[in-house]
Length: 105
Image (cartoon, rainbow, N blue to C red; front, side):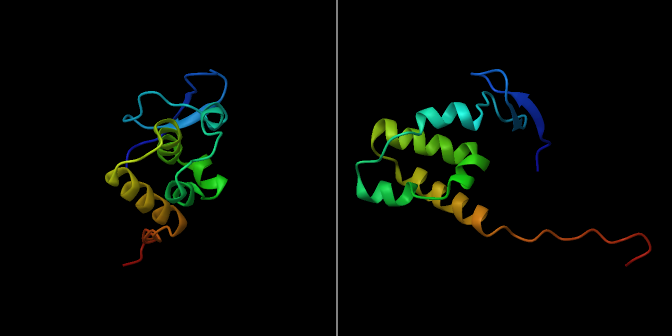
């Protein structure tokens, strides 16, 4: 897993966002929320994008997919599959293994 650090939002320059070395332009939830306003016209997209607000707040990837869906009106098959897998992983996180204590085998 990549190391995470805090960076200021590119747009508002006041909020901090968790980022890694892979993230080029980080945008806070408040700034991207303006782009996420609106409804999808396609019923299948509307059903797909109807997830809790907390998941959008946690993942910039999910926000980006929603913004693209609203802007262009459709998504590719790979985008839909990636969206579904990320939502599933976030709803059901895999339990992490606990490191053994000192003196434990």
